[in-house]
Image (cartoon, rainbow, N blue to C red; front, side, top):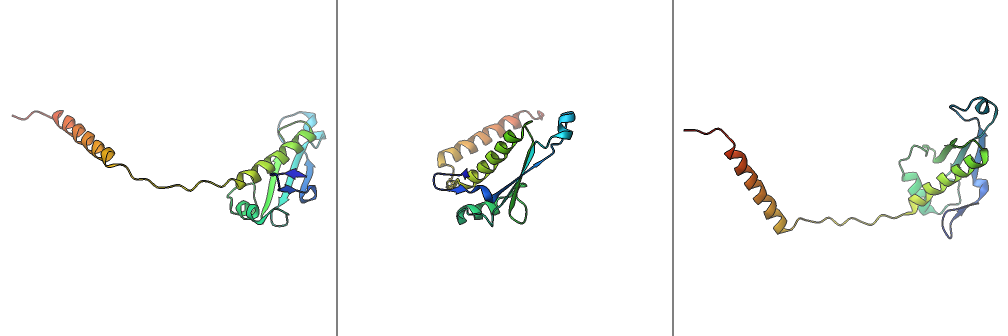
Length: 137
């Protein structure tokens, strides 16, 4: 069972975890032991509330396939248990990040004073630059 918030949780049978061999350096251990974890979570078939499902499917993340399946590969640690926990933590963070509703931005305008100060400084700068030109007789 994966706890997302106080009242939202994902049952363990909706998350598919499989052990695979890790890639990269590690000597013989990499070749012998399946320590990496491949996590698959189908968003559409899950028991998540519709709010979470819609936000996850609209998310442009390379971990989410076109079919709506979250695929996470964890191979950072040498033990299968730590990689399993890391994969579940990443899934939890992904779903929790979707739940945060951003505050609507209110567009603002510059004040009259700031506009006049900006124009005055532009005028002053232009006068300075024109004084740097060649002196004509």
